[in-house]
Image 1 (cartoon, rainbow, N blue to C red):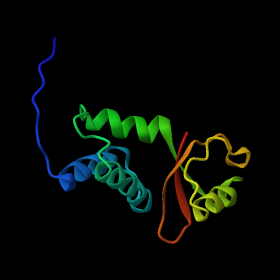
Image 2 (cartoon, rainbow, N blue to C red):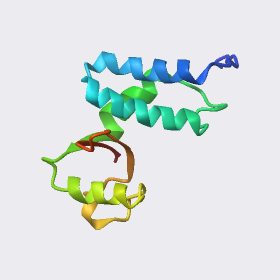
Image 3 (spheres, rainbow, N blue to C red):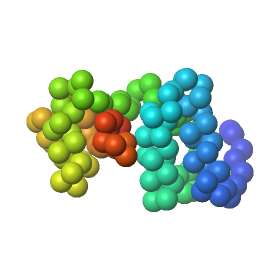
Length: 117
């Protein structure tokens, strides 16, 4: 049986730990900014409060298995961007979104969208 210790951490430290793990994957700056937006939203909304925080597992699974960055070369990019403009972030039931389930973050210039599968 594993032992756990409750640790209180500043939100900014948690975000920094998560974002820094992306360096393992050599993620470029623009993509890293999308993940930072997503993790900031998660931390600010209490997603990790009281939960086991395994930074490697969270980030590695998001990057490898669960999230994808769309740009204008993707067939569904314009449809997903329209849902973002309409305030529809849950796109799991939308036929025009290639099976993606959620819009996690959009770049400031709206050239890239981080979606969850």
